[in-house]
Length: 180
Image 1 (spheres, rainbow, N blue to C red):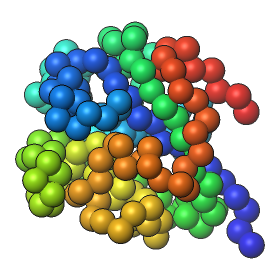
Image 2 (image 1 turned 120 degrees about the vertical axis):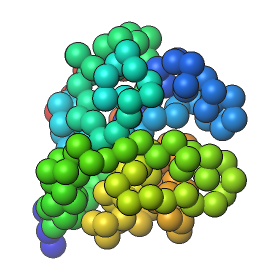
Image 3 (image 1 turned 90 degrees about the vertical axis):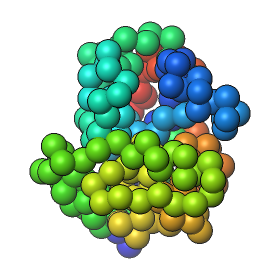
Image 4 (image 1 turned 180 degrees about the vertical axis):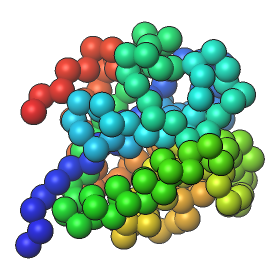
């Protein structure tokens, strides 16, 4: 049996106007999803703001808790989940992730995809994702199926509902201290 490893799913609510608009519709407590390969969340990826002050310029981002959008919103609330995976699944995820990293300039934020989720109709464009679609895509392309739906229909709240994810933290993101 392959050695067990973990990846981490971070769900957040920054309280920005954009998240309040989404929350008004979804009624979900968290409206942004990211994936990390370490408990300290030092290697954290998603689709979101490329620059903290510009919500309209979005795409593939490596997020940073100290300097990025999260640092601009110190009252960000979150939940962090741990997903136990095999070494082979982590290797697959990293290969998929490196495709995104290598071509990060060509990726766009899939704003229409969010509307598609609301209509329960997937809106997919090549090189265009929203946050939870991206995280679900990384898992899906690595053979990890948490739901029976397309990544383009996965919401941040779907992660909260998955029984394969184990809650390891809930509270203010700025107060999170990883315990190894």
